[in-house]
Amino acid sequence: MIKYLVYTCCLAAALTACSSGKTDKLLKHKKWKVYDVAVPPSDPYNNDQITQSKDLKNGYYSDAYYQFLDNGLFIATIAGVPDSGRYELLSNGKIISITSSNGSRNAEHLVEVQKLDENNFDMKVASGDYHFILRTRKQ
Image 1 (cartoon, helix red, strand yellow):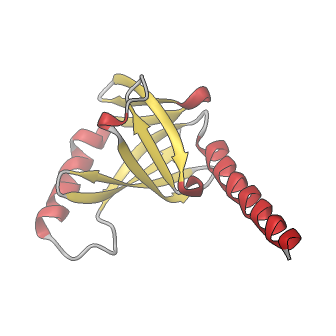
Image 2 (cartoon, one colour; image 1 turned 90 degrees about the vertical axis):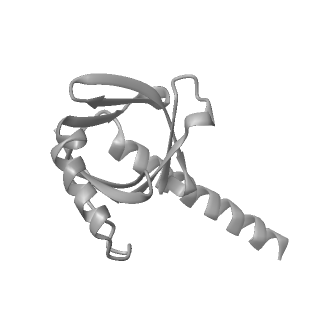
């Protein structure tokens, strides 16, 4: 019985590592450009949130890129201005923790992976009182 319990725990750990590794492999060494900002379909209808998503798409995120590099390095380029930080995959690769360059979690941003493949990366982010889905494409 103990043998099966140990085997099950090892299998679960291996599957967790594989999923997180797959997410990291798909994210890394690509330049992800934001092309759309959407309201999550599960959120209740809110006209302010819908208006804000359109404003963010046409304003702040109109020239936004994200890059995930080796050693947990994260680069966000907004309107041509790059800023770097650190990233770490959590929850089996479903959540990305973005922190400052020194890794301090005082200004941590949690990003939820909604969709990720070779060419598309949709992430759920918090902005103010609302959540938005940033839809990005590989450049």
